[in-house]
Image (cartoon, rainbow, N blue to C red; front, side, top):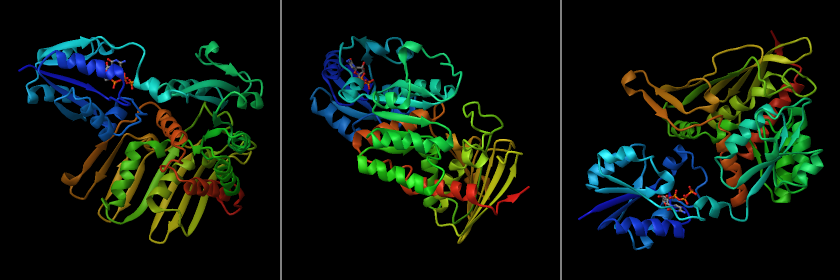
Length: 446
Ligand code: CTP
């Protein structure tokens, strides 16, 4: 008996898949199909698969062409499977030509011709390609466009540069329209990414939402709780998505860490220490500009605040700020201390003071250590008194993390539900803390 094996995502099963499965079956007597799990797809950069693993496996079975369906979960599994199932032929479509030649020392490798004119990517984006406009500064634009390519069904089409003398920074000028003003940009897109200065963000987000355009905003979304609240209410009223682009929220490692903490992995949590500092952020020309909302706490505060809210909740009893400011009154370093009924959080932010950008969560049975830069993390460690009980956890996190926040934004728009990863309440509470700092005369100065 000749055993054949093939692998794929098989999302929204189409005739290209059927042709492939028929041809694979014809190569032998017994066909095994490995369907990729969600985590494996995410790890290899496929972020917007429409169907669940169970649905995709069911669809493959229902073709009647397959003798056995298995799950592909990890890098290197193909070799294990070939040995375990005694496979004679490994096959896959010609779009993978050459990529699996290394398997030929274990079995025969056959590339079958790919059916032209159909793909899951096309089916997913059919009829609803989102056209995104970017409002902001150019250095971040190239990254944003590059990362947007990992999310099917979106296209960055328009830019409104907010800085003089902007450069397209390697972007093909024919691939993007430069808007003459915001109105013109809004008339051409169905979503915007707002990367304006902190004090201008509310203005740009509100204008877009009023026109029924989805908004992804850099954090913090506004400088007062009232403004943040107004943006979420406006989005609800207009039936569109308003999303805070706080990368940590969309990092799998961070989400898994929070679940472990809630499960009591380090006992009762007593302390959260989170630090985010940078000396120069080229992407933020407003960094030292008071009028534009520059300063350490506004620039970085959302990240440690989000971590504190996820880990300890939003019900803190007191909070104090300690800052060092320049002559213009812009804080170069701000430490925020928050007191909870049975825990504390120490959050440090800096744009003129540099420190170790790690996150340490201390509990009654151990602690979690997340190395710098913890806010875009792919790795953390659970550490115990007895080092034999220590555990390291790794998750995929590519690039700057923009692709994950974009994927979540697009998913929210398609499913018309707000993301569960960053709640409206957390987002408003972040703005409330920023507001308190900006208005609070009782900040200690050092
Ligand atoms: N395949 C094919 N012809 C197509 C599409 C896919 O022969 N038109 C083959 C692929 O080469 C692969 C298998 O079907 O061997 C599963 O591919 P998969 O990646 O799930 O399908 P795509 O439609 O290419 O998915 P996507 O657009 O998400 O990459």
